[in-house]
Length: 521
Image (cartoon, rainbow, N blue to C red; front, top):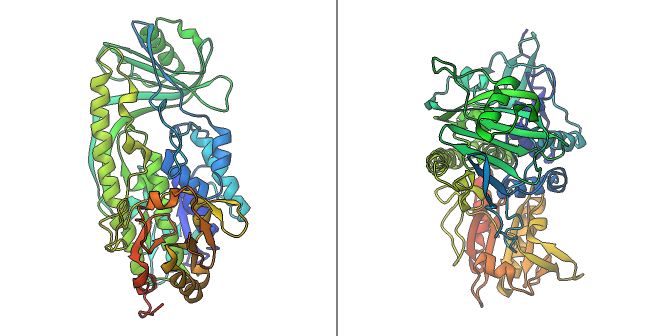
């Protein structure tokens, strides 16, 4: 079929959490987006166990965090067994508490299919629906668009295409992008969703012995559904036995000492091998990669789906500015510049956590809690090296850091206002601390309109926020008596920190993004 004019500004291939996050982010920015998936129906996979605190912040900005929290549950205590007997209950988040600058203190358990359902519902509110049974079979890039032939003979044309189509990504393969790394055949497990009777659903059960392990975690929102994970059963020749209800029952009986008949209705069976692979680039012309299409790694630490969600959050605002003509296409290069090093770090971190966990479970009392560290929250990942993070810092923050939350009040009404509520939406946010920032805030809003929303924190200005308890000043490291401007990007990372007296830096930063000439504020 001959190529047709673009039918969308952006085409997303793959409707997992990464693709859906990107589609929601683009749709709320009024970008004409289409999202396709080769599957004939929506999967009921429970593979990923849920968003970490940073991803919950992303989902809050997209307007779905409340739905996710309602549909899932807090992480459960881990009940560890040896020789079939319980020896310890461990809650790796037992001491965690929400903080003024970080409202989510722990990950959230939710089946992946349910999270996807929530994101699809949100996307439908913008009038966009996933197109099923649409398999990308080719890519043809032109000077202004990309044409994607489909396996059924149809063709879709878009200005940009993003491959969010998993570790076996056809889009990545069509681009010819290398996916270097390794697959460790020895580190293998079988997984599936099962129904089970007679187990306490208030715990994540973990049976360990010298020969392997069986893990059963209840799936929130189900009455008898569980995530099942185990080392594979092997035949006499040492080859792994394909997963099935019968093999799950044998593994369960062997490692727990309980009757295998406790398990029933195994589904979504799969064999997982530890893969550590990274695409050597995230952009080829008008085609980009995100999520597992760009990186895969060990499940230790639970960062796989979360890294993909955060890829999408980084890319969405940049892609929207480019397709609407608000920024030069070179802005898209900063997606790879920022996210590829994060993925590289994640591969190394997950590999190290897997090693530590495998060592821990050989010891009495050891378990999966070894994989949980402060880094698994996702809150510490920043972009200090980025060209979008020019020099600027306070006693607590540097340009490129995640922008903290803080409880404030509307200076006019006294109503509670969190900084995350001020950030929510597709705009940049300019925070002004100190009375000397008020003029710069007014000038920024006048010069940039809807692109920038300006808030004076204890300064007056276009919109004033009171910081009675000092949480905002503390979180942002603002010293008493200083007048400071903090520009927060649409993905809630700090773009710029500058003294209020140098307000021209804000204009220079925004004009650099747009490719326009320097303007004085």
